[in-house]
Image 1 (cartoon, rainbow, N blue to C red):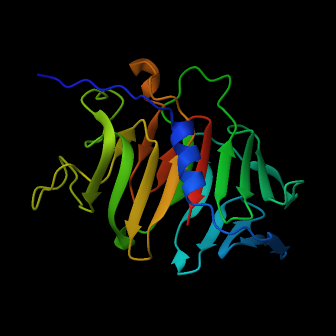
Image 2 (image 1 turned 180 degrees about the horizontal axis):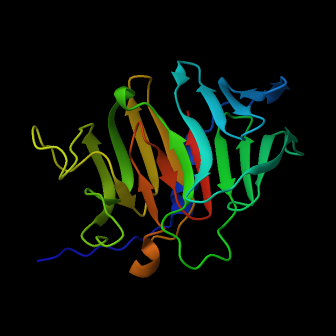
Length: 250
């Protein structure tokens, strides 16, 4: 007998709750630049970007360095045409990266309370795409587990989307790769694409950090659901598909 589940709240609602529950005492955002990079700080959080590639270079919070880097497009040949940064009217630090193809623009925002947002413009004009998204890197050796909200507890793939149920799931790190590893198999696999992600808390030796998405809508039809995938693949990348707006709590 199969168990069906449907979401009763949307990712934007959950993201708003997480943001409100983690509001810290707001201070002032500051930033400085060198010839090659831009660094911004607020409420004990410091992030740095490469001015040429537009990639996230480093993340630090009050407790530790968080080895999360990247934030660049994958699945398409797209080069950086320009970057722009500064403070907006709300006192936020903004870092904008413009590309030749997908995405046309990536916007990073550091709020005075230390929350970080990344928004990528949507894919337009493409009919057949193998995969596409924004890729992040984190060292596999530092991962200990993950807790997330979305369809689980098992991963999915383009032709294997059914079976997951919406909920909050948690699993410890394991290196099970079905068909490639045959000893000490642990299920569900830690790595892989997971459908309809709302948020994910990475548990690491450096401390935990959380990523929450405001999109995509989790009730999409299966033919479009392949774009609703996020991967837990430390050492490889985190890939967030479609036009995305992600909030980072570090």
